[in-house]
Length: 184
Image (cartoon, rainbow, N blue to C red; front, side, top):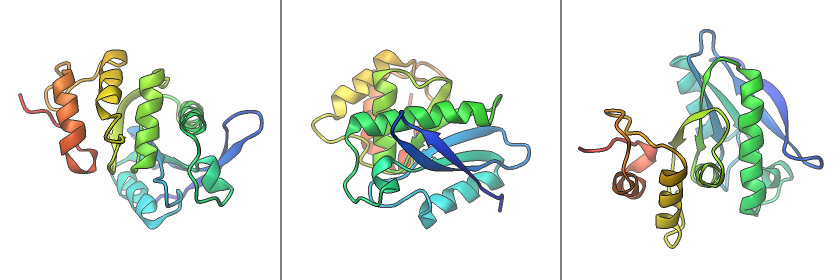
């Protein structure tokens, strides 16, 4: 197991959240990993993902959302949660310069990351990785998929061809654990 380094992430002038950087020697990339609505960055699932990725030379930056940092059970409003995602991504680029960065998370964390990306592309992020569903509330799913496709040049991870709206829509709705692989 690779040791974790505790860090502090500034979300805005008034808010700071905790983070854990786990960067194995010879890391090839870094995953900015957000927790789900009911469990913190220290949850055994999150630690297990980080440890498994470290064994594969993938660094992780796990971080808290402000509500979890304060011990509340009620998730932050999307605007604040998305600002937290963006702050964590920006912090990552300074902590692991030169590494490819992907972002995402478990359920709520993945959903907030996808929505932040759809709003304005996350700086330096090369891909989104989701560990749990639902990514989008049922009423919003199509709109969010269209936003991601139109604002970010999505590519199929199998063949690297540009992903179409229908492929991403199918993938977002049908694959477990965020495994994205298009059928051509």
